[in-house]
Image 1 (spheres, rainbow over the protein chains, first blue to last red):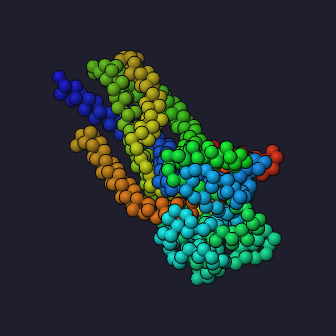
Image 2: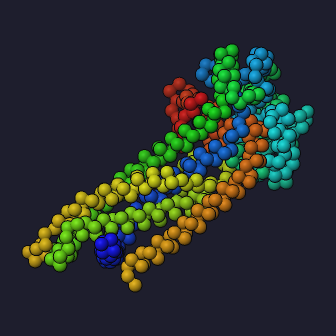
Image 3: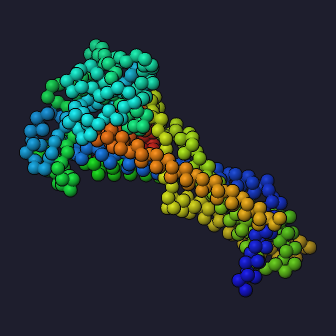
Length: 397
Length: 93
């Protein structure tokens, strides 16, 4: 019994494949467009998942608490005197002040991130030389030294030169000796970065003595981070207190929302395609009408014709799904999502050369499948039914 | 040869290709984790909070330490105009 049913469906599958082959031009074009839509949708999903995973893996060691001072809704320099207030909170292990900001290079319209801090006071600070392609980190006491990211090195066209100059706010020039260049391994984190001594950063940005940009707080017991953050927010009411978990959460949301926004655009394309598929499938040509009526005269039942139409739609949709997802992976993994780079980078002049590692889970594939294959099958059900109920005598009428 | 056999051949080719890509992904991930210690040192040593993906605007370079209002802070009535701003969610610290 089971064998008979299997044999019957195998024959129906054979017939469906022959039928697809007979109208190969039409079916190939539908397959191509459908695979293209799935490719775009899957590529976006893979890019956003890869970036989310990358953020999750890379930002595990951000400061436990970051404190910024807010004034009139904007971030302002925070007084170093706040550190005295923090020292009274039990559980805080250490507080590291930082000065950081952006430097707009008018020569090549690039934005650099300039960061000044005492790296020896930071966790793993003494091991930071491992993140360099060449050179070392600036000495604690040494001034006029900096470490730059790969993109800064390229944008400034340094080649063998090891001196870079920036303008202070009063347009006087400040020169730095480049004592180190970040390795490409950490490009995703340091590409636009210029790291220097905190006093050099203060001089470059003309920040008043006794003020810094933010404070990095490290606590003895990680379980107490939220409690200590709340205490800090209570004591220093004009500050914004960011915890590591909030930063991690931001990155889960940022790319999730991004993919959602892009998905809306792509789903519009998918909807347009399904309307096209409906239109194509519902328009019964005289040849199709004759074919079905002949089949019915030969003894085929409506369910058999429906099965043929189902297999035809399913084969096109499933093949388009597999081909679309395969090429999406190739696009993201081997071509670094070239099609979406302009969207990702916008007007950025410098950007890292990071490699995306698609993070594909069964959930993602199922999501793409549900958004593409199932609507397509649903869109072709009614046309298939209309096709299957063609009366047997319509060919000879 | 029956058409089903041809279909099976196509499915087999796709299966082999996808299996190869699956292992490629695993190798890539393995290589990434081999360098993860250096990423950890960099993040911890510099206290970094953000990925350097887009450098065109402050709020896309450092979304984790930016306010959701930042894109509109340039002047009263300012509108957000950077291309990537359409795709980056505002940060909710």
